[in-house]
Length: 227
Ligand SMILES: NC(=O)c1ccc[n+]([C@@H]2O[C@H](COP(=O)([O-])OP(=O)(O)OC[C@H]3O[C@@H](n4cnc5c(N)ncnc54)[C@H](OP(=O)(O)O)[C@@H]3O)[C@@H](O)[C@H]2O)c1
Image 1 (cartoon, helix red, strand yellow):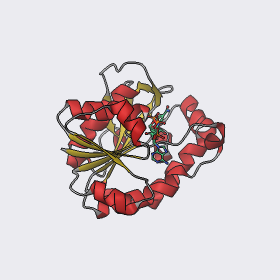
Image 2: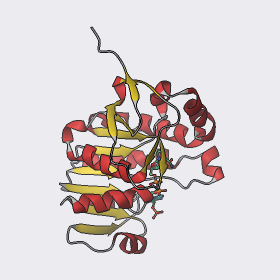
Image 3: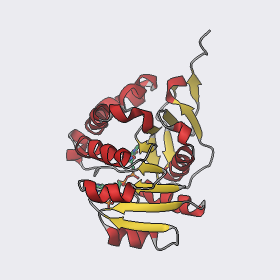
């Protein structure tokens, strides 16, 4: 597949990019810091590092043209200020979606987080506290950004992992359609490596477009099937 990656230099993004190349995909990493990208990602015959700003619709449209799927693993800086209030996603996601979908890409995988929006309803009490207090600023931004791109929903799939770590992946990831989840336990935690691999699995299937996924190594209580 031809994959456009936003956030390829991030801690999850670089693992995703390496895995996608390893699996034989062709990757375009659209980055605002090409030197950093070259240093982190190196060179590969199937990797193109395209310098460009997320605000530059013309450049982003050119990078999007001919891609099968876009994967956004973007994230704002995690400073105290950003935790309190941020508009990072609200400012960028609408133009990204308009441009990428406008260029003909019909599947956009967005890395979100468990606890964002309605997903918090399925969380345990401690996880709800984390979402409503510590993550409030960042998650509010995500909810508002998601609302701004609702019109593109047939094309969007979101991955909702819990707290991320830089430990090696365990490879026992479970992926649930968020709509089927009733409850999770504790504070779900997962390695970035496992999330990166799962993002690739989600991206590889165009039929995943339109679905939100819980990405976890823990269990989840699922809703009983409707009779
Ligand atoms: N931390 C957690 O426990 C947790 C849990 C669930 C979900 N998440 C979400 O998962 C996502 C990925 O997390 P991560 O830790 O892998 O992220 P990260 O290491 O902070 O990477 C963020 C990426 O976004 C890029 N970026 C930031 N500002 C940009 C801008 N203005 N223009 C272009 N690119 C920009 C960064 O590029 P540069 O490095 O070049 O600036 C980097 O590639 C984030 O959205 C995060 O909110 C995090």
